[in-house]
Image 1: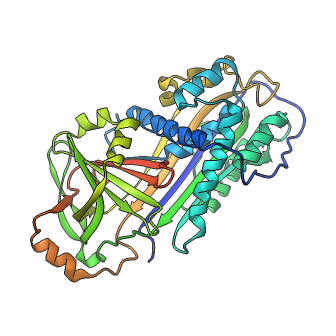
Image 2: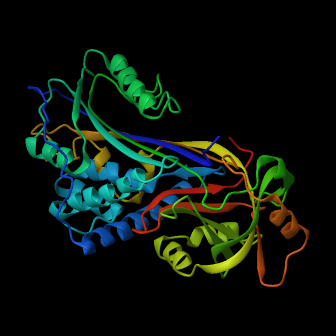
Image 3: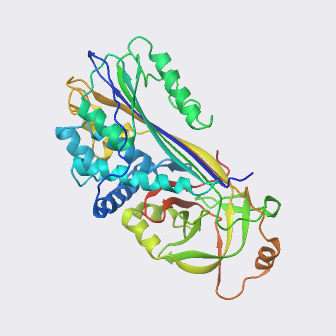
Length: 420
């Protein structure tokens, strides 16, 4: 096996309405491959996306379970919907998503950032990062050409026609089948049956998928060196988990009031996982203070150190309906008919967001490693002065980021590594 990390993410925004339209949707514009965008706009977009990432974390953290989502995917998908928002709907979405530049500058900035990330996928056989967008529109509903052109040129999202009015179930199955094929069968039922998420009033579904697979730059020892060790839950109780071990490594490390952090690069050192380990008994306290500024400060403080890693294997999935969270964050009008204003999409006055569905799966293990065991065994026996022992034996938070741009692609927390 070659993959040490596999992440699959799919998101849909489902828009419904109370009437019907006429005409057929066509979008045949090619994506702009080299948009003219200032570095300042892209840097601001990365910073704003990070702010949204941790605003959302504060909304989602109340559940007492593991957590995993892609703030980048959400920002990107909501930006496509934002392209059609006007009036108070546009203002609220901009405030929640931290979109601080005009629409004319925002969408090319997303295109530029997405194009930069796509280059990561071109260099190595065992590395994959792909981002795919598609629109699914009612076949006789009229959308504005400007809206379709914006999405085609900046997001590569073409319109696929289905018939929600006559065949909502067939439409649901068609979209799920596409998602399943794009994720190699890992996400087979993104839109569940029997919940009315898609119905005969649906007029547009926007789908976004991120697939990421990579080897560690510094491999963990092979699986037979993984040992059962204690992991301490938030309530202080103890469970036994399979704990991976590394040889002595030179890694970026930082520590501050209430936490330690370490950066684990992936092959090629263009993306990395940053693991943040709050001090014993201080997880809730630390989590409450976590925002974009603190995450940036932790990353900026990383410095090279000699580190002995122990980390639990984990694999789990998360799923969310995000209507309430996004409404509570400050954009309720987008979900309310007849107050939602998506007149930038269509002349019809009845379009609103029915819900946002987000599903993600992550697995971290030792696969693909044939590391030198002797060095690691010697390090386990006793650490020299100046070596940091970083044992992740209690709840932790992790970020997966693009190192060059600073884009945070994924955010997660592990309260219990055995939870699936």
